[in-house]
Amino acid sequence: MHFSIPETETRPGEGGNGAYVAYNIHVNGVLHCQVRYSQLLGLHEQLRKEYGANVVPAFPPKKIFTLTPAEVEQRREQLEKYMQAVRQDNLLGGSEIFNSFLRKAQQETQQIPTEEVQLEVLLSNGQKVKVNILTSDQTEDVLEAVASKLDLPEDLIGYFHLFLVREAKDGAFSFIRKLQEFELPYVSVTSLHNPDYKILLRKSYWDSAYDDDVMEQRVGLNLLYAQTVADIEQGWILASKEQHRQLKSLQEKVSKKEFIRLAQTLKYYGYLKFDPCITDFPEKGCHVIVGAGNSELNFQVKLPNDQIKEGSFKVTRMRCWRVTSSVPVNNGTSGPTAGKSEVKLELAFEYLMSKDRLQWVTITSPQAIMLSICLQSMVDELMVKKSGGSIRKMFRRRANGALQRSDSQQAVKSPPLLDSPDANRESIAKVSSKLSSVSLRAISHSSSSTDIRANDFHGNFAFEGIGDEDL
Image 1 (cartoon, rainbow, N blue to C red):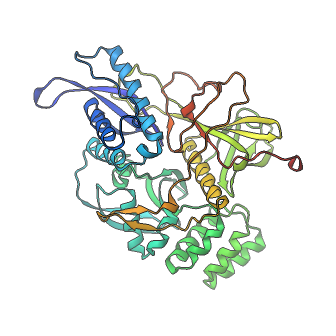
Image 2 (cartoon, rainbow, N blue to C red; image 1 turned 180 degrees about the vertical axis):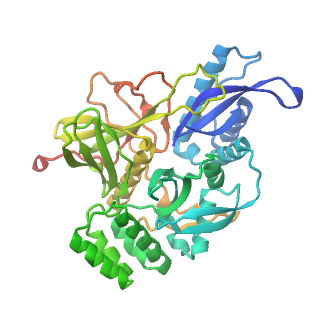
Image 3 (cartoon, one colour; image 1 turned 120 degrees about the horizontal axis):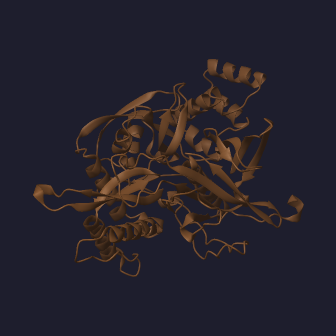
């Protein structure tokens, strides 16, 4: 996830006390919570107490006197870097201290009291599952509630995930992001104040070999079947007329496993398709439809001469990638329209085009963050497979009754980034081990392709060089 503090806001104190400065923490360009310096200082002290001063990043110092506008802006930048550094650290960013702080702050900012509510979760076929939860329930709590409602066995819960999506008029879903451990699903979706935003249950893995695990259980089979049917109906999976006939015949016979087996042989099975966007490959300004799956990003590019070309970029040949954003600068303050400016998001990856040639490819899309998440999850699966491990995902209960993912489900650490071959680009020694933490900067112009900082990057453990036989 992309953390930033793009603006501050001066708010009146309670009970007639003096005004204070509130810092707006954005995730993926959307306001997540509004906090005071003292709250962040409290978080910092908790982290130091638990993990030690040598592990926790430096925190902006206290000031005795009221801050000037310039000092407020300086503190905003320092706090933004602090939050990014904490999130990027495997230990700190995944800690319950950090995540519970963000959940509590999100709930307080949206002024939603803790109470029992009914939340609607969609399945891929449009079916609605209504679950009774608390407004303060975190993502895994809600996932467990949905699984319980569906009678999905506990050992299959980890094969599925909750996604924030936007439903189009034709019923198609545009994927915004996976819901994270630091947010409250009910608060996240209701705070958008738009009925088009929904929460959707979908499988969380890429390798179709894991379908066998899911199909062992009746409910898992039904969920996978519903997703496969929906993907075919909306054109995400391509099939010939004869294949469509065979699929229809299997549907009529309710031969769900056979239907899925046939679908597995079709083009783009298991891919996640994204909304039309813009790329600079093979030339700037090309319209493209991107699909993620089978350890690759598939491009269907419309060239300026209206010719359509298709090609794929293998994850194993992506040396690294980054997500950047452009948002209007407002001098560190916010007015009535704060947080409503459109954020321009770009995903750029460095690709091994030939044995000795690396090239940056950029995708400009509101779904750039989701694309980045897809890349990392594909890398994670490849690394688990390479190490001889299994992604069979289990949930085990913590002492307090909440659910926790097993060790086999923890994300694989990202590697150190290789030295850049570009002499004009400074070498990067270390990158975040969390895909979900990249800096989100407020800039007044488009990001330059050479304006790169270490914490903008995700290195790739699965990166493989090209041998002579591949050329």
